[in-house]
Image 1 (cartoon, rainbow, N blue to C red):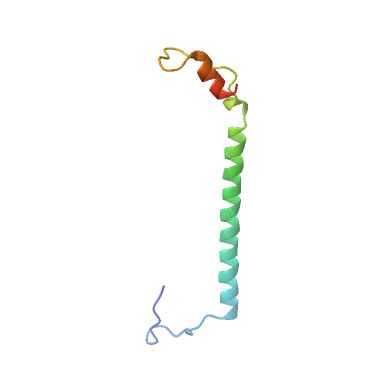
Image 2 (cartoon, rainbow, N blue to C red):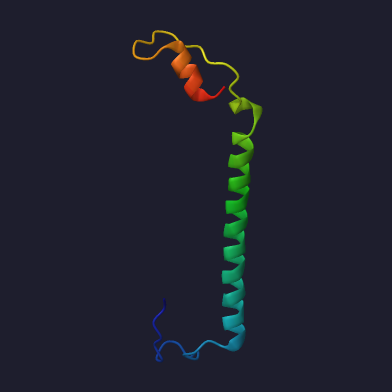
Length: 78
């Protein structure tokens, strides 16, 4: 934020209506851009999560001491 000094600066203390509109429009575009980027990131995460890369079809259990193979595979609902 700039400090107004009448000895150095001769511009008016208050902003004009056009300046206020410009700032408001700029703020709106920043918000829209942020929301668009957020939506794209959310879409990317959802599409990656639903991709075939994360489809688990089988589980191999090795070296289990506490639970049986059937208990582990039964808990996964596969």
